[in-house]
Length: 195
Image (cartoon, rainbow, N blue to C red; front, side):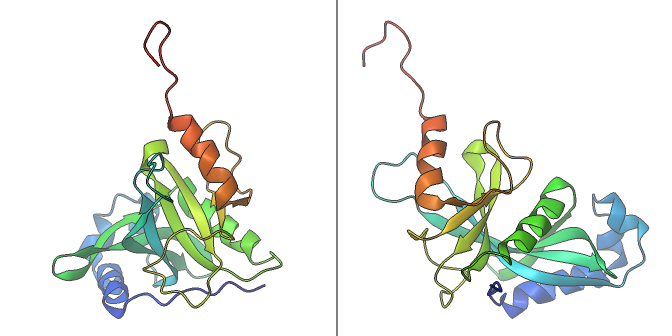
């Protein structure tokens, strides 16, 4: 089924396009590929980036918050980097370019998600406590990409590199994967300490 990619806010896209048109921003980017290619570069597949701050909270389901929009950057027929826009007090602003394993891993995960039997709205979910990023396949296709929490039917696809013991590029129901991740963060009491 095709993915239903949400529409990024126009100011977020404009901030990325402005950065891509700026020789200074591209040349000074900490991405060797962007500084060596001449372009033209095209941003595509805008994905809202959400953060899951505290997965061990006991008061209800984990909460997510929007931190930005990430665009895959193409040079001709290949993806070479990503660009992120973040929400500031003044609105949307270009944040940074990146390249490396998460870019190619996100592209692979999106390609695999296209072959799933159900349609989803793709998002990115960062779990800072585990240094982990997942492709979040949200089941509500009509939802605003900037809002909403994890739904019962949502899938999470860990991107590579994933934490040890978590298989990248394997879709998990969010309700199944979150307890595993929570368990990884819950410390066992030390021997001899009160329970």
